[in-house]
Length: 375
Image 1: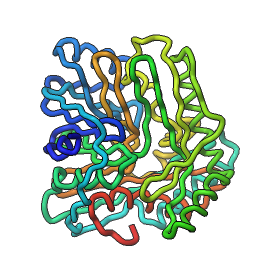
Image 2: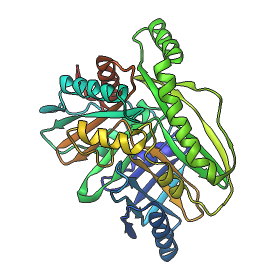
Image 3: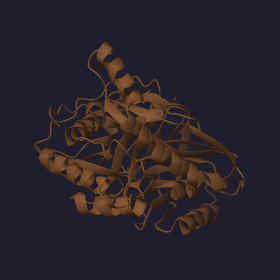
Image 4: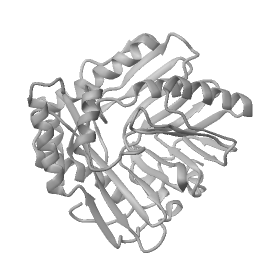
């Protein structure tokens, strides 16, 4: 059973558990670190061929010029969906220290600065700004104990634990599929435009309706869909892009969603090659990408690392699945650094974007059983 695969996770392994499949990979036959997308794909394909392995797993960083971390594992177990997983979120240890970087007020100031840039004469149309919570614990974080509850708390999401250089782990439960490839069939499901869930059913429905009717969020979503379509179309003989978005919900956030499907023109193009070409989308960076990345560098007082990158696997046959590394934290020993971001548009309100990031933090905190009011 897939639930047993999740429970068999041990630190240093790779886990990706989603609505349709679960993969657990352990050990290392080879490690590939490379920043150029085409060279990364070529080196991973060679490592798979040289080792006789069928699957490589890993993570792509946010910054295009930074090296990816892809591993050809010694053992792989694949099974069906990990849902329904019966585990309740474990009661996570209470942190002994909580440090927001930047502070709430600092984040609102950064959003206000981004809005000024967006309304100015430059080419910037959207920028995604993130903030972090740095949690310190009295004892090392027990990832194996926390993962089953995180899977159970996010039945429609993709829960992952990806090993990173230096003994760190990227842990998360993302709602967003960057790209999957099965034979020549390609699927991408960008999300952009969000509101926190309501407390009562009536309030929740009203917020969902508000999101669908929001001109600001529809515009934010359209920017992302257009960018994904622009990247995928040259790879595909046919591509279907719905005329408008639908709603999807996580336990804490409503999102606008568009499921894009296509057929590859060249069956030699792997899932990893597609993921590297798509990343980073405007859903995690902004648009135009160069201008948005420059704004992020100026306004975010930390390095993103592998947050808002991608986590996934690619096979020797080219199939694979890569998800956007959102609702995640970087874990090392007794420290956990949580990340959350929001898309900033010319009509954005700083307090609303702060509330959105708080709701996104709650996805991971609730799944880990950590009670942190006011995060």
